[in-house]
Amino acid sequence: MSLAKMFRASRSGFTATAIAVLLAGCASSPLPQWRDSDNPGYAPITPSIPVTNTGVPAVAISTAAPTRAALVEAAKAEWDFFGNQQIDMRHEPFSAPRLGLLEDEGEAVQRVAEYWHAVGKNLTGADCQQAWSAAFISWLMVSTNVPPQDFAPNETHFNYLSFLKDRQSRPSPQFVLRPAESEPIAPGDLICAPRGNNNITSIDEIRPGLAGHCDLVVEVHADDGWAGVIGGNVFNSVSESLIPVDAQGRAQPIAARPWLVVVKNLLP
Image (cartoon, rainbow, N blue to C red; front, side, top):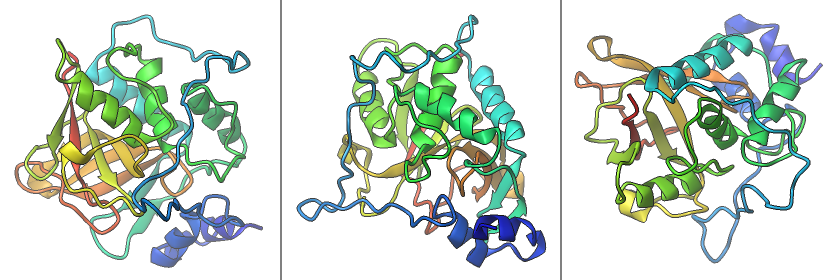
């Protein structure tokens, strides 16, 4: 039995130690580390959608016009599919009120493959060394019919953030970048943080290839001091993370999520 599955069998004791193990992807494999001695904040990247790769199945795309609500519903549906795993990040150490299906278990293997198809990759949930959180966000956008001129699907979060940073200066952007420290979040927005050796502190510094993570906001309870955000590859599953917010609904940074940017969703 894998360590991750052993922890699932003992849910009551699942806190920081167990989460540290699950963070490693497949339980028997170490977490890949971004390394570049000349530029420690840079994560090597490859082209997102190779033009010559014709063997990747197409993503099923909604025929309806893209909306904020459709993105939220799509994220919730995937969270349901993975068994509604929750990670409570409001206090240290983190805890997991509910555990769900892991990326390399059962039907999840091919479900993660669908996310990879959105960025032109023939990978599955069994490819545990490959971080799929940006593929998940890209799949949400593609499957809800957000056009590529408004969101460029990519396997790296800071690549599509770089696209959006440039896109917002042109007519009719559907997503705009705002500082997380001052911008309240709302359902349908993305909330993003640097990770690893990425130490940037401003939107101006966003550039392709930097390591990071983004989640889709699905619920905000400012009066109670928390919000729920859904992301892929969060402790090996599609998880809802419960994060602290202030009375105005602004995400409060924590060590694991030093929030940098809110991608405001301007879709109807």
